[in-house]
Image 1 (tube, rainbow over the protein chains, first blue to last red):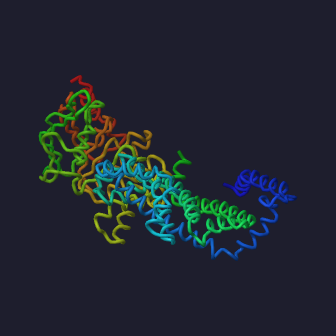
Image 2 (image 1 turned 90 degrees about the vertical axis):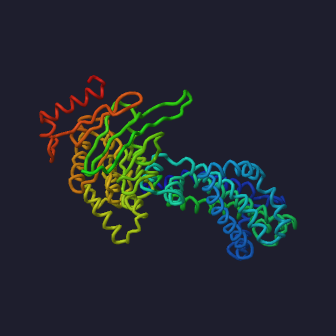
Image 3 (image 1 turned 90 degrees about the horizontal axis):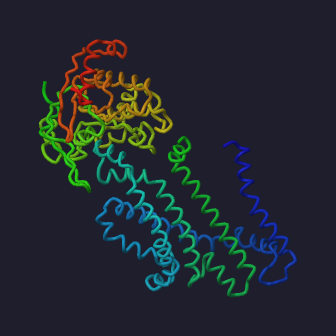
Length: 257
Length: 256
């Protein structure tokens, strides 16, 4: 893409958000309603709190939990998904359990983890990783099952079998499907990161926002909500960049096809 | 001459919803070392089934296949393949170099040796300097050359090809046929090729196995007594070439 076309794409994507922020800004400018303070006031408070005074206190612990929980989910989801994808027999025994567990709404499991782990970070990390594992596991299982038989035949004749075949052929071939599971898992992980902080946490973006609301610090609560939105968006952008690098072969191949 | 591959009384049946389908019936044939053998027959006769048996991807219902006198179970050592559908046989997430390196992992070669194998096999097929490309960045003919390079890099004693040139244009096809003749002259690899192109079979082979019937049996083995080296223009105008292709064609069509 040329520079001007990329600029055009950014402009096309940006006009609606810019318009919405503008409408919010002007509509709220004269507001005296304590629940809907002017956006200009929210923004000033946002800068005071989050650039970067309170970042180490609230943002860092949230992102730490998210990173550790998501990393565990990726390893567990891809690992177990790959095994279930290759071994139909194991899958027959395990799949009903997987289907049951993944049907439980992620946020609803938090109280269970509180019972098991108490109220510290390990509870949040456990809830995040369990919730994010399912979409990654399902995508990996399906991707590994769907390997082109011609690729497998080729590998088999060259005596690439067993674990080597899984690692060198099935998993790389399944990358595009696995990445869609990874993206869904990341979104769920972020939701659970925030939600888990609504229960018994003193630190973290979710905890900050909830405590602010309970203390009628509406302005602070608004900055928390905006911060979550911006963080979620930024996390998605980082994911997209990683995906585009990892799937370069797939994107390039599709462009030519 | 010693037999590199022995096919002994091989029969193959598949269970289908309409009952058992009997595809191959009591096939026996010896492939001599350093020979180029083509397997021809009408479409659907079971050529590819026979090839899957030879590569160890399937087990025969009865009979056995031996390589160097030993019954095979699974893919035999020293065997390499080139398949028709190069777009699905080369790994699209690996560059050509890494595609070639993949089967070499099991051979536990050093880094320098691996590199040397990649370079020399790319050179053999006329693809020097293109190893950094992804398969899908190359033309069909080049991808098939890369498949051949991957096969050569394992230093096989047996090369098995399934309709290797069926998906490329006619000019590329002639080039690839001559490449295969050169490879064969350079390395003397015992080669088995399934093809539906009778001209191609006559042009390349020492012997042609004609499959016919349902279930298929060996209808005949035709010895191609045209001397090497062969050339696209002279060999194909040779009177013996015309006789042989007419003979094979008639058998494939069941006219003889």
